[in-house]
Image 1: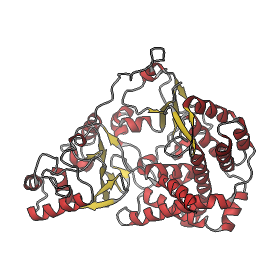
Image 2 (image 1 turned 135 degrees about the vertical axis):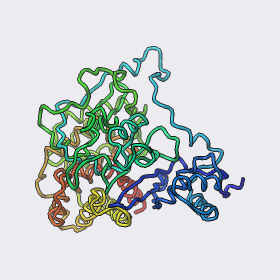
Image 3 (image 1 turned 180 degrees about the vertical axis):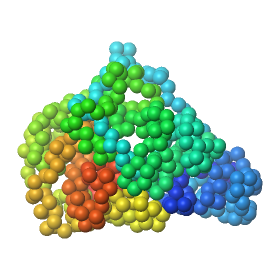
Image 4 (image 1 turned 90 degrees about the vertical axis):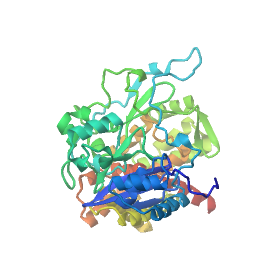
Length: 491
């Protein structure tokens, strides 16, 4: 077959995420290309065709199957539609059959290891100390994420408990789309109504999970039950920390008596639900461009930094620490720079803010074409774009950096949680990740000005740091950091 020819039995590629959104009463299907970030909006009839394209039917068979489901189309029109998807790189190649197969479920089989090494399942759980969660029940986290995953059992239970939601009681596909690619798949994603999980009750800035109300906490999918906990195996222990991505997290700081991140009776990794995604730190970690350190060295450094005296301005401390790590590596001198930093240099920070503004402004334009005005993600992107635009004014940026930090306890907890959970380690070298987090804190400091001007009173606005974190990770705006780094290299 020609590499450009339409597959005889087309199906959606695994790198494409199909998401159903209801904007008011209008249904929209968005195809997200995870490789490029591009979006393609479909109507219900087009999605009917694509849903019938499971890799077992030719185009004529797809048309017949789609017509049975109320999505009639003519064969030439269907051919043209699939040709468009194929040209955009959204269809799977016929020899890539592994893409269509469900992902293997998690198993309890331990990987090969040195005979004298500790079984990973026996690694102790190291839970972020002195933190418990007080959920305010206002649904901020349920209104801002692009995907809420259900495994097959969870989806069936949800449809049984709330069969009227999207009329999904009898038909799974009315309430869910595949996690990625086409059916069959190991997990499904629930449709969103004006950016909110379809199972969330209430309107506007409030709402409780109707699955929780109908069946208790166990009725919710695993990701919702474990949120906002994060799990990282660093070779010594499984660090359990918290993602600072919901207003409830920061509102819980210093408040005892809330819900623990995990059941206190659990002691080791093998006690955790095997479906929980436990990330593993690699043997070597990039700490600066062109420089790496052993995992054990990084873990020890992280503990020393967590025990250091926090500076009055955490963002300034992170920027100073980044420069010290690039100059000296993971030494005690670097942490001393963190504790006693120079004031943040606006000129050094400006390229990071400008890169985030470009990303957020572009996303805001894209969102305006299909997201509801009531959609929290749409409004949050607009707020971040407005804040970063305002910070392009040198006088405003100078004034903000010279002002006392309004919520130092929030910023210190943000860093403590990130260090405990190794959340600074990822695609960026550590030194660049430190600058990225400093930029996020500065944007969060500017957001209250934007909220006041816009008259924003959503509960999610109460904790700007959490709003920035949720949008950057959950909606891909964190890619701005690569733009900032590339821009710095080019200049």
